[in-house]
Image: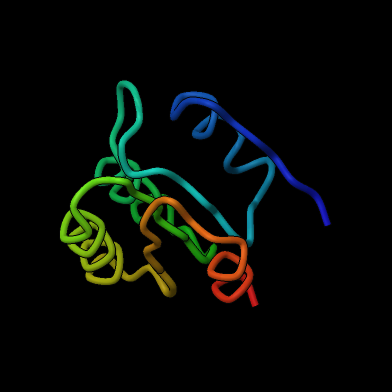
Length: 94
């Protein structure tokens, strides 16, 4: 198993096609680009990876982002609310 960690959306976009992830774990609130914008970008780039959205904000924001991804044809979008427990993360990765 390989893992690629990025700290900003620009680096993520640059590495996305060469890494070809099977699972993406991302915060919804990020500097410069938010999760909604990145979900839109992923759908435009025909992302087939499972996406796990994490937020410490209102869970409805995460739900709206999840619905957007699903409406755009993304196969698997799951949301978790911070603080994320190890058990919850393991459950969505299983």
